[in-house]
Amino acid sequence: MQIRVEGNRARMPGLVNVHSHSFQRLIRARTEHRSPAREDSFWTWRNAMYRVANLLTPEDIYHVARMAFLEMLLAGITTVGEFHYLHNAPDGSRYDDPNLLALRVAQAAEDVGIRIVLLRTAYARAGWNLPANPLQARFITSTAEAFIADTEALRRSLPTVQIGVAPHSVRALPLEYIREIVLYARASGMPVHMHAAEQPAEIEACISEHEARPIELLARHGILDHSFTAVHAIHITSEEVGMLAAAHAGVCACPTTERNLGDGPVPADRLLDAGVPVCFGSDSNAQIDLLEDARALEYHLRMEKLRRAILRPGSLLSGLTHAGQQSLGLAEQPNDYAILDLNDASLAGSDAGSLATAILFSANRTAVRDVFVNGRQVIESGRHFAQDEIVREFRRLCSRIG
Ligand SMILES: [Zn+2]
Image (cartoon, rainbow, N blue to C red; front, side, top):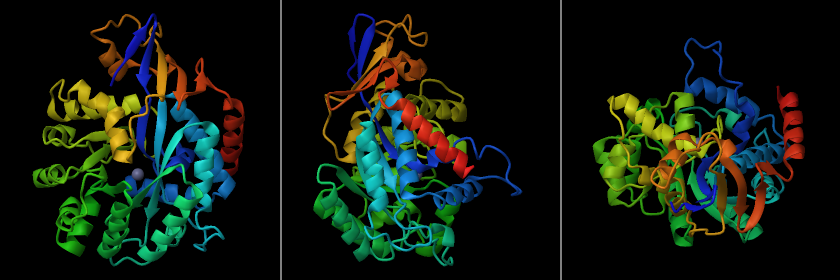
């Protein structure tokens, strides 16, 4: 990451948030208590998330996306990869335009002024040998053929937006479906993103169905390549690290979400040592601060290994920018940048030798003063031009959802 200093200001490339589900911003802080379940986990959180996902109208989806994207800009994030899996009406019926909800999210990005890559997500089933779950009806596209037709329609509707293909997970799709849409994405030059190895239960289910672990399965069937990003990749063996490296695939870590959901730490030391690039995502948007994601990745490993200074700061900084662009199929964007105030209390006193690590390990969001996307200023002196209205509409939505 190239940081340029002029007086008491530093110009930092815009951060690239590779993995977001913007609507989950609505359940922030609303799942931080014990549920009636005996033990809370990723799976009890997921029930709360499904409940909210089914209450939202297309306009609600627009308003919550604006709120999440506004907060991203305030944190110096200039690009978001939105892993979008809400497609249908709550009862599972298709809208007249099957991309209605994706288009509302894209509109939110345009109105707020953030660069978006829409990762259109395929989801076909609750899991292998599991009955259909009515709470997932909004996500479902039953066949690969229909998914490809809908994705082509979205590409026609948004000719200037980068579109990617996101098979949700090995749990949510049969293998043949995954293969078909990945071949389609590859032929069209689109990036492929997929949740993989986030939770131990997902590994066990994959072994039961395929007699292979998720990354192993994807490698065996030629699904991994340089355009593939595995989101999470937490519970992986050394062999699977080698498979990702051999295929030149990448990994997206989401540490603020992974710690929130009790997923576990991404083995970034093993991945980076093997040459697998690691980028970052805010995922559930429980918190939106990509610098915190980068430092949490290092800190999780320190806590696990009882050591210090495990990852190279340069790898973390590259993960926040260059590796993220690579994962999303974007070129470098020299006109996307943030201006930091070096007199901010969190950065004061840093010098040429310590500025990059000061930004990485201690910068608060208050240090982000101005943000530019494609040369257009969207944050000025720490505020967005439509901030009050966006927050007002979001508060109205929260009070309705409860
Ligand atoms: Zn996710």
